[in-house]
Image 1 (cartoon, rainbow, N blue to C red):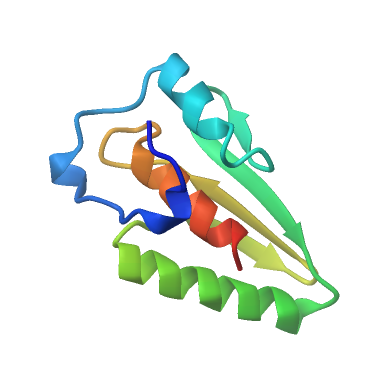
Image 2: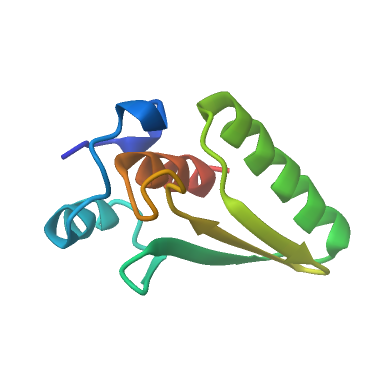
Amino acid sequence: MLNDLHKHICVSCEDSRGHLMADEVKELWRQVPDWSWENHHHLAREFKFKNFAEALAFVNKVGEIAEKEGHHPDIKFGWGYVTINLFTHAVDGLTENDFILAAKIDRL
């Protein structure tokens, strides 16, 4: 499995071999321990901020990373919070891309 996930680049979904199996998810999940693994389907994390402006600034930074990587999370935000769900829509489950993006978001 990949090490130093934040250094990797997301691959095209067309190149994906399908969703990860549970043992593969558990191995990669060790590198992004602040994320929860929800329903054996997606990664989720909530971030807290002092106000709406800080939450919006964070969302914009996540958006920049997502665009650069070509891998886009589901984001919900409001006053003082941002919730991010990551999964690969093309395979309706988790791929290495989700863990790479989670690791990059963790570094913000």
